[in-house]
Every structure is written in C-alpha cells, then in structure tokens.
Image (cartoon, rainbow, N blue to C red; front, side):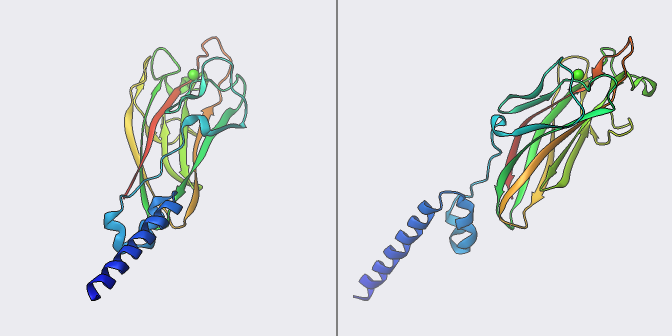
Length: 220
Ligand SMILES: [Ca+2]
C-alpha cells in the first residue's frame, strides 16, 4: 500500500509538471526558473531575434539619397548603402525589434559586420571626409549601448570599433556583446545608424556602406 501511494503521488506531480509546461508554451525558460530542481531535465530554450521582415525601420533625422539600398535585404541581413542627402548635415535612422528576456539570464549576442568604402580608392584622407562620408552604427539593448561599429573611427562623430572595409565586396567579421536581464519582459534591440553629412562637389561619392548579418542569441 505504501508503495502504491508513493507511485500515485509521483504520477500526479509528473502530470502537473507536464500540464504546466504545456500551458506555458512561451517562454519555456520561465518553467526552468520557477522550478530550479527540475531545470536539469528541462532543455533551456533561448529566444531568437525576429526575422528582419518583422523589425521596424524609421528615419530619425535628415534624409537618404535615392541611390543604393538601405533596409533588411533578407531576414538575416541589414544593408545600409544609401547616402546622406547632399548638403545635409547628416542622416540618422534606426531599425529595431524586441525579444523576451527573463530576469537573471545573461544573453550572449553575436553578429557579423563589414563595410565598403564610399570612395573607390579606399579610405580617403581625413581632409576628404566631406566628400566621402563615413558611417557608424550603435547597437543598444534596453536603451543602453552594447556595441558600436564604425567604418572610420578616426573621423569626428563616428566612434566605434573598426569593421573590416573593402573596395567592393563586404568581408564579414564576427562581433559579440552580452546583455544581463534584470527584469522579465520585452527588451528593445536598436541598430542606430549615423551617416556623416557630405557636401556636393565633383568628387562626391556618398557614405561608406555597413552590412550586419546573422544576429543570434545564446543563453548563459
Ligand atoms: Ca553608400
């Protein structure tokens, strides 16, 4: 009899656990957090960043030229190849989304980035920045800067880690940053691009290009 009772209790607990897991289809990680002793048997599911088509892209300041492409080229690649409009003091735009974070979890983000010089001749001299403008992008998590990349960190107003630059095809390098969630709920991810202002001259060739692809999350 004692053995039977024990068995019945075990079965009951097991069913409850299964029902709870099924009801909390998202996020599974919350189940692990609520039942620490069971966490070893529950596979940790990391959130994924939404596909590019679900991000919101908006102009924040200035205007973009018609030439080139700026936006999500596909669900895993954001291209910023248009230029700040001539005579403008510069252009700022952003693309953003959210992911569901769980308090106490640290998320490791990785992405790949590379760029192409505005000038076919490669990096112009600093004195030529006004005709071949640079570009940088600041990636923030929940309003806090997490990573900053630049085509030319030595130019004024464009700080950041140097991304690999080429004269034609983008060469991607990996970059990483972490986010430690202190609250459970949506966290906003923002890519904020700054295109330096360029002046109209005979030698004008627009702004450098920045590509970002394959943003992924792993949980620690
Ligand atoms: Ca360009």
